Length: 131
Image (tube, rainbow, N blue to C red; front, top):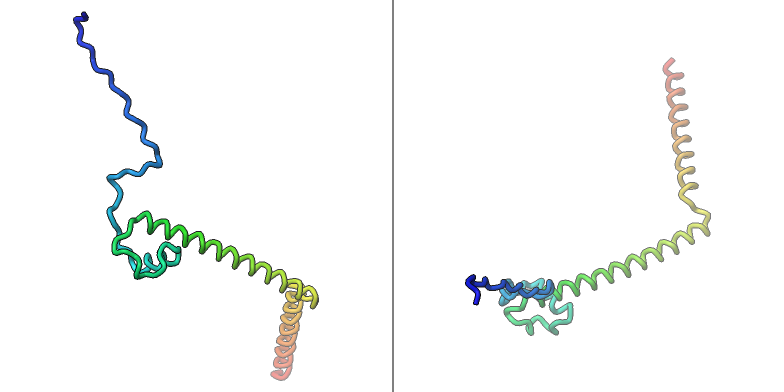
């Protein structure tokens, strides 16, 4: 045989998928706060707060928070759509009454001009009386 000792080949380490959780970082349990308990009930994970165990996994809390976050976004989107429809309705009513921002602005500026004219006339009248 060969006089040189052969070096053992280094085998490549098996690839770990990115999505695989690491066991070393998983918390054994998490004591949910009152708000976390409410979120667990609102998300439908538990029927009542009495059914929630003393220690819950962080993944369960995180899933409940995400579910509440999505539901909140849906409610906000629905509110925005309803508000937009209401504004369109109000705008169409204003057009029917022949109201517009331009006409309101012109009326306001006309009132300002009248007030300024009255103040000038009052100042002239006072100066005339003083003489």
